[in-house]
Image (cartoon, rainbow, N blue to C red; front, side):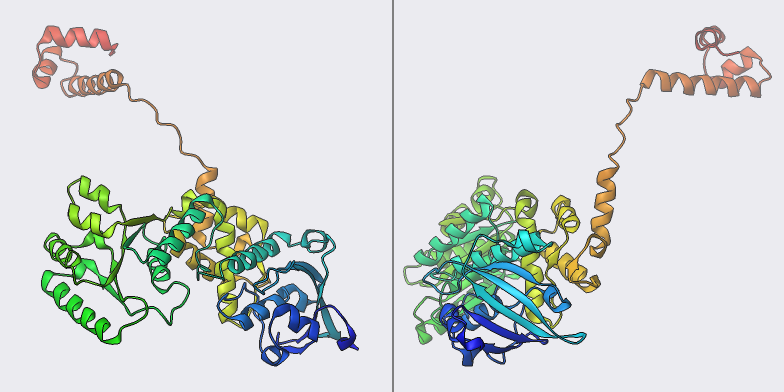
Length: 438
């Protein structure tokens, strides 16, 4: 009966494993039923480098389906020919009082959206955006984890594509937690990690000239022996922390005609700006900064926060049997308003902590870490405006109090009080009158 259905159709059991996939589904996904049946689906966008992984992510219903809710959503085609997205109908299957699985029916689009059928439309839209974003980047370059639709991040992805194509020396600049090392490794491995040469990460703050020379010499010899299709690379982590004498040694290496190693560096600040300020070797800054990629802090691209939060949540889905569909609107609003001093690393940590606390299928406001709530509370209580200090009034009050104490100690004897204060009697009398002391 199911095989007679002309539209793509699949059946999952209660453990989210594919138990049936018709021929139309195989054709639309571009993956055979033999590769799909028996595999567990996870509610995440899928790794664009793995066809089966992407296909399984297309078939995975939102977690609410296994609680008995019917959901309709858009699913983009995972094939490279960019077929039109399908309208997926996820229907729970029940046996008496327990869930036994879900029916996935990938129907021709008819204008129905998740907004019209599913209350949690915002989470589903973020999931769909991740699927589309990853599939758009799954062709030539593996940029699937450089997430964001802000203009700054679109520019970063274009620069990364250029760096992969040109194999030029590049420095990735950004605050701590902004993902500098991940971007640097993406540049090196490009679209084919098997073809990339070896990559050696070096913590620049620990390098002295002798250690640098020994490491680079040994690595260059190793690369010459293996002869990879793409050159080996030095990953210079925090190159702006490189000691001055080591900067000179590295510049010497890079200017050798026989030096064939690629260099990818990370830094917290622009090397050319540091050189202009006199705190970095100008020649080395020029050699390393053929292309500079600046990663914006998360606080400057807050529109990307919901998508990034969904991305980190779906990463957890991919590695855990427990599946969460997304965030409530209140939780997303709180994440949007938070200043994110720790950038991506802090957001990833917050999502993991929130997922551990969450008892439902979506992370709510109460599940967010305490720091989020403290920040919200502080935002709702703006600091009091500073009151100006009227110095003359303060000094007059201090002087009046000292005169009163002197008069009490001398039983109101003006002459003795003046001597105690170190001033003349006439001056004391004038100040008593001027300050209104009784």
